[in-house]
Amino acid sequence: MELWYTEEHTDTVRFSIKVKEQLYSAKSPFQQIDVFNSEEFGVILTIDGLMMVTQKDEFIYHDMIAHVPMATNPQIEKVLVIGAGDGGTVRELTRYHGIKQIDMVEIDQMIVDVCRKYLPQTASKLDDHRVNLYFEDGLKFVRTKENEYDLIVVDSTDPFGPGEGLFTKEFYGNCFKALKDDGILVNQHESPYYESYANSMKHAHKRIKEFFPVCKVYQAHIPSYPSGHWLFGFASKKYDPITDFNANAWNQLELKTKYYNTELHIGAFALPNYVKEMLEDNNE
Amino acid sequence: MELWYTEEHTDTVRFSIKVKEQLYSAKSPFQQIDVFNSEEFGVILTIDGLMMVTQKDEFIYHDMIAHVPMATNPQIEKVLVIGAGDGGTVRELTRYHGIKQIDMVEIDQMIVDVCRKYLPQTASKLDDHRVNLYFEDGLKFVRTKENEYDLIVVDSTDPFGPGEGLFTKEFYGNCFKALKDDGILVNQHESPYYESYANSMKHAHKRIKEFFPVCKVYQAHIPSYPSGHWLFGFASKKYDPITDFNANAWNQLELKTKYYNTELHIGAFALPNYVKEMLEDNNE
Image (cartoon, rainbow over all chains, first blue to last red):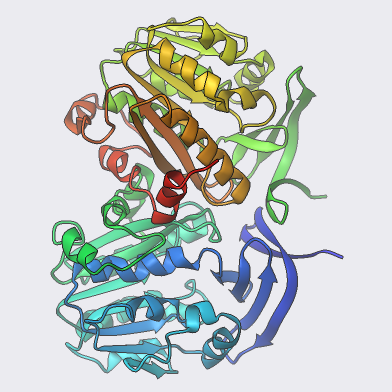
């Protein structure tokens, strides 16, 4: 017998991973959650049939969503993380001794429970004393905050289902309000290659740009995500991720990372022309 | 009826593209050649069941293999291209008026004939008056050359079958000899993510480093290739692709490119730590 997990990257493109066993399957009040074990990618978490985290390549996503803003402003003390139920983003953030408080808002408690059990590699630092876990809607949570955070990380699913509200103008406006005067917003920003993802990317960029004076996009090679070419948004009230970046300061922290380094920090913002054009000529 | 092309990225990972029709299928004296038409990737050329070129994303590979060396030394006049039967590499090179001669050595004439018919998008410039086509073994061709070329581009298949000789110590040594004192060697350098490709990458890098004082690796996002994270080797007798790079000089040429730009030129050499470590601790 062979068991294969297949993800549709488009209607006519499929990515399949041979699975040793299905470890978990349940429907939460918000979404379908599955966990598989595979030879090539190790443990895999899928939500509504889309790959969210794999044991083999999660370091890439989590390095890039956490270290790029932290290296841009190493003075960050108070962080809001929205989504991120697997815990990988929090794991990377807790490595910074300068961070005093991390509020993590995940709508679906079942994701956290499942990852604590099946993905301790990512969930291991959710018990850090600086972390406050809130199981509620990030969209509503952020509405009540003003001038409070140094960094907001939006580590969301794709913009359908529970993740949809995290790609709206209202949400980005509330993030702006919730950030301090030198605050940074980083979000998972979809992908430029397949059309439906590219449309989400253009949509998000256009809306974030309406609020933030600094609004850039950076990229990483994430093999388990559609096309392998994944983007993150960097928006800020003050800091530019290149011109305000102090590589020496970050290197002095002596954090060991498997993907991120300070040269790649700069390189990640050097987008291909076709991606730059999509972000510029943007009527989404 | 549905027709799907499936490529095995590893024994347990598959990538599948829905195909409208198979346009061509034949076995040449060297390899199995197939051409498909697909909705997402347009026309696809496969060799021995592996994707070589797709109409949708070929611009990425060809931009990166041609413009990185040409922008590092815009004085390049005489070029040897090995493999590259689809013509895409030559198409990009012919855009440089400074290039006086391109010798292209492709072992398999059938590839060129098939691409002229089914992939005119890449093959269109093979008739340029500066191009000399040789249908013979690149390994043997380069053995007879000494101090002759400014640039050698090795645009090969993977290191099995006819491409195998193009990953050997003997071949790289002969390339070194065939290059002038300021010559550059660029090659397709496999991928760091899946183990068998990573082993080929380490193997190639170690062997090239034995001959060339400058030996670097750069990357691109190529969605149709395994993991989407693809590498190129840049080796040289003299020029460093970063410190000797003159972005203004290249920008003054006013070449329109869909992937390459001069910021990305530098960014592409900023490799993730896990890739750098593989290239450094290299006992392959």
